[in-house]
Length: 133
Image (cartoon, rainbow, N blue to C red; front, side, top):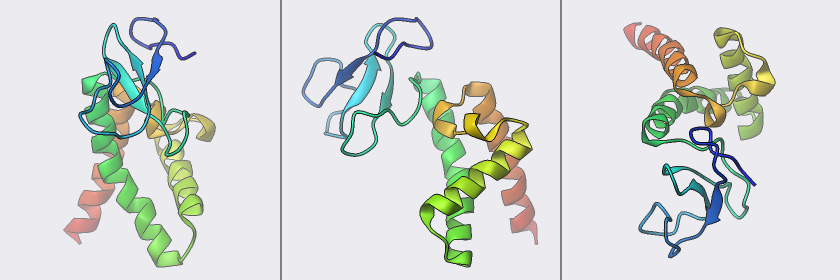
């Protein structure tokens, strides 16, 4: 059972059509805290969460962080011809070093709002530096 990071209530696994499911169409199962409306989706074809439960503000920050971070490891994948997994792991190792976090604790899906803001700032700096050249 998953616990909500906001209210400590148990989260429930919901599927499309069930009361409390946060989407109008089927995006797969979602772990949801019904009392405070924090949720997280699951890896495709599984009930394994993609990260921690997140409220609307944190979900927005996670999307912003991914929008800046993902193109970086994807560029490495194209440039070096390495696998998606290898490129993402290298990207998260780099981000962990920049954020001063252990690699095993560095994943946008588990970040809190402050960690997302820091990741966004780090990635924006690289993005702006590359585009200024």
